[in-house]
Amino acid sequence: MKSNLTAIIFGVAIVLAALLLGNAYIKRAKVNGAIQVTGLGTTDFTSDLVVWEGNFVTKNFDLKQAYSTLKNDQERIKTYLVSKGIAIENIVFSAVQTTRATRQKFSNTGTYTGDEFDGYRLSQNVQLESKEVDKIEKISREVTELLNEGVHLYSQAPRYYYTKLSDLKIEMISRATEDARTRAESIAENSGGKLGKLESAKMGIFQITGQNSKEDYSWGGTFNTTAKEKTASITMKLVYAVK
Image 1 (cartoon, rainbow, N blue to C red):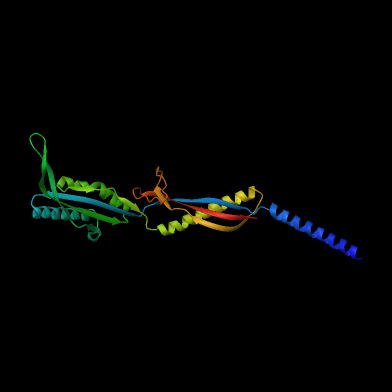
Image 2 (cartoon, rainbow, N blue to C red):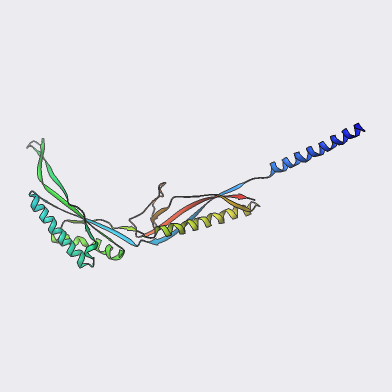
């Protein structure tokens, strides 16, 4: 009787061991995989805010006269901009910058003998910020007409911005996420599996470049201000479990 009980126990132990080993093999053979994909969201848009700056200068040996001339130039610039449809409150002048100009002196033999005072140089910036992009663009091209009136005004290239970047970024994230999910579903289907839950999501750098430009993306993000027509893009890296 004792020997039969031993045999039964031994047989049960063998069956249990076989079941445990078989289950371990199945779990070991089961792939616990994941799919990592990167999605891209892009859109073209037109800038709705422009900033233009100009710089005007004068020089005179008499500081008081130099300041008077600069003040007169400021009034002429203001009058010109108002005549072009710009409201006075939108014309911003910076503080006056004053420097002592010098020039090098040389002897008859060409030897440098030092510097001498060459008058006071005064400069000032004028800035316009407006949503009337086309109007400011036109002014930035035509304002140098003041040179013909003796105003030494140098026009800078306009800078273009977009006031709805927050909304645009949300839209781009949505597009990039959808693009990534579509890629992940395709990979899972082609590999005979099913897409599981989203395990992680990481947003890339928001980039703004000029449309049809050859600008390179930057690790810190590119923010183009020279082009009125721009392209925004962002990437999303998603990791999905696979069933």
